[in-house]
Image: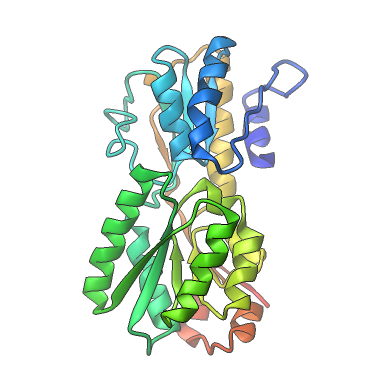
Length: 283
């Protein structure tokens, strides 16, 4: 949220000074999002920002066709039905995408490099995010076929589910885990990183923040850049611009982060060429 406020400030707005932000948190419970969105609509807010959550964006879209909505998502906003065009979004939505669409396969390839002898990898999805889950599963299945690997699909939408998922990974002797893009997982990076080390399970997610929290590998677009861009667009709409005139931004820079301390804890000998490709190595 610091990056969001930074972007908002670049557009000339400071919370509590010349704008008031009504925060709504679902704490990973996507079933609460429609009611939260409806409440903001009843309050007649000027703009709704949904950074980092496709389910929140879909809930906001369902709640209003007039209040501007600024999103940040990891998927394709056209495929998800949020906008009709990237250059001219139409309707009341615009925002930022970090191009995580298509990166599930790359994360599986990275895991395959790390655990070269494995025959099975797993992907973890949040079943309460059906749109994201569908995309993640399809990409993971295609990647597994291409790599000649078995694929295990696990689900988690609570912390208890996370415990069960990692226990299952150990039981089936999976070689590694790819986390599906989801706000629930993003809000529990430290817990997931700790579980991956405790259960000796190499795990890949999309953000640098996962690696600095103790996760093994992060690969994807910049979290800070995405939040900052969402803040900038929110400020521009507060200044009177319309979503249709603000093209959907794409965070095109992809970054690779590796935590060597976690690799040591997992007793992994990472390939030198993989370490050499990293944008940042935590040691």
